[in-house]
Length: 121
Image (cartoon, rainbow, N blue to C red; front, side):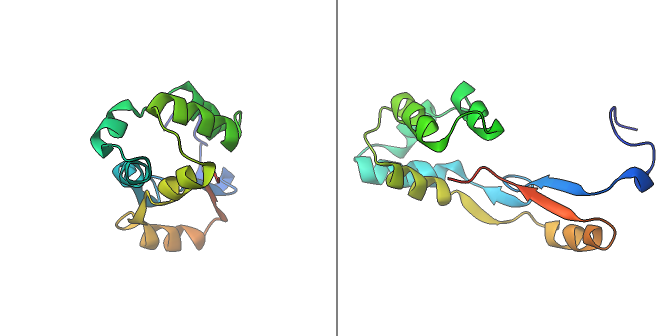
């Protein structure tokens, strides 16, 4: 049994899924292309500068609001984009459901309430 996991399935009251990368495939290169197009930059350069840094982690935890994260992102990427431009790129990273996930969620929903989590902008 995994550390911290319940001893039996009977003690599970609900399942929480991280939507991005677990339920829905993500491709950050799509955001880099949108941002590069709007800023007349090279998408590969932006990809090389992007990272899951402390600001990203704080935003994911809800400790940093979108405006503050966008400020950090602009600084890290060396961009002059509006919040709307950043949101457009960010929203473009979603590809499609992870293969097999629809069937898994359908089966799980027969036994447990399901919840999804994502960081909205």
